[in-house]
Image (cartoon, rainbow, N blue to C red; front, side):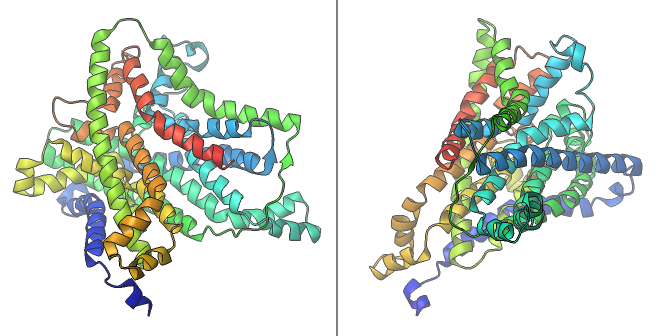
Length: 517
């Protein structure tokens, strides 16, 4: 009976969703294929070099995940389980590092701790070349990801389990160990893995701080090796190894998100926080904000100099270019995410969502390498697409689609399928039912996904550097070029414009956090 109500299965939607997923998988498959046809490139790899890259990348991922777990987990517990004045402000500040890219934070730390920096007497040489420094920067900048996942899990946790354990005589520590942590384990695993994935794929922060990782080596091999065929073979091999390192984190992340089911017991009153506890909360906020978003904003304003019309002109040119390309990438990503999420939920094809989220595993240089391999493999695309903005926009879509997919899929979960069925019974066709019923109810989720992808594309660095058309620059590339030459004052206009351009995403996050606090 239900099949008769629903009517045709919209095979076109399945085809479009499958094509979108194929497009997302194409760069990774191209890199893997190139690696296994690379001939003797595997045998030419230095085992000592590979061991160093592997150990450094895994150490970076583990340390960054642990820092995010400690900081984000503590913050999520306090703002969810304790009541204190200014709780909404604390939530917003703990989320604020999402508005700044880690590579900008790392560049400013190099600047303030360098030979002419104000903190050189105390931090001279401490931040450059140390994996711990890179883990600290990445862990603090990505702690809002862990904070958001764990806060959502804690808010949905059925407290009747704790009340039952308390009735049976379990103390606070025993309740935490026996009841709360087992229930939160999927969310903890998902948050840790998401941060570890980011650390594995990061290029800007590790390069600014001089830490050798797979992503950094892949980029510099592509950028500096004049033998393009040899460079693509070697980087394909390194990329395959990086994918093997990142794959377990991706699988754990997907398992954690799928297993996170916490029920919905009766709400209970949060306990008030003591004055000493409030000091600890604001100390934690300062620990997160001061070295990240606070440092970037304060240092950018301090480095601003009057005049400098030429720098502002270049910064605005890069801004308009980046706005156009990032807006196009965000629109395409939201359209693809909507198609994938709708088919996954309405046509019982849940496997499409994890495949569409594979971009979390792919660092920018790997996506850029895969795009170059695909474009140069076909004569038509080599003649018409190579060196154009279309390749860069496609790479941004692949990298950022998971963010749009997460927003759209979570929104679609709240739209019952029976609403579309009711519209079909009233005479609407399949497309009409989706257009008139589903899309209006998804407006907020679509807007959130668009803004998130837009902000991610505005900040993206390695793919922009490798794939941008000759003669053009993005804001991230403009920042990187000045920082590489240690012209930190010259990069202030571009840094300020980048912060202003990504402010809507941060503001949206803060507003949503305030409504749910």
